[in-house]
Length: 316
Image 1 (cartoon, rainbow, N blue to C red):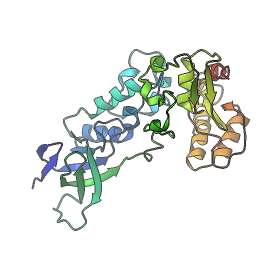
Image 2: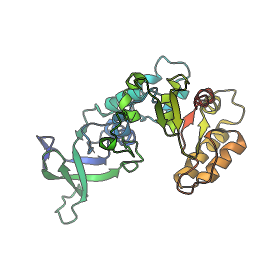
Image 3: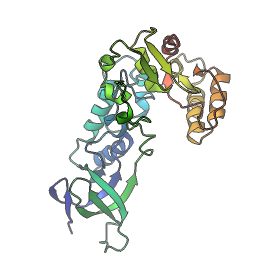
Image 4: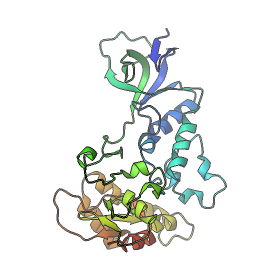
């Protein structure tokens, strides 16, 4: 029996083996491998396009935090792996990552529903013999609702909106009346050209990866001030390169285990333990001055090159 599915203004007469909720890189990776294995897969994404965090941010030199080899599906190699020396250690740019996500979703066994919200399972609906779940979907553009039968539902929704990197400002722009220009790093669109202080001072606020990358594109002058509270500690990107070479100073498995331990501790909220581990073993590089602020974690994660940190430290 085929179900009449309303999505994106079109009629679909198709049942699915798997419904993947979330169109970020991980959800699309799962969908692509299942599709390549012969399963009919639907991707449900509440935004207008696939990509998750990569559709919201494009500051200068924005890259995948981890090495590209760890963020890919099994059935399709990324274009940024081809014709590139040491491709396994390469951190792809935002545009390269988004292009790869789009290419993974381009498969005849994948149906994509954008502007669509997953509203849970309809436990009262009548199920057929093969389809074990009835998922409720709602169009965020038209308001229409429909159901989709599927044998499996996979949730790949990532972090909440703020932690996933969606542009968020702690400043209400309309409240700024002195002529200052307020920009989020995601609005720079891969270029620092929009940073114009018109003779005044430019303040870069924050100490996480975005601030590091924006400052990398600028020269330290008295007209540029870097403002942040507390401090941040990052994993040295150089260690990733070393861990993936044949002549690595420590066994490959051991080095990868250590480099994964700090992010794992961070995920569980053990910021101080993660920072202590990294700095003690020489795995981390710190920006800012350590201070005790209970509400502000001292370690945020991410990877930076030590030479880039040396550059940003030159700013007042």
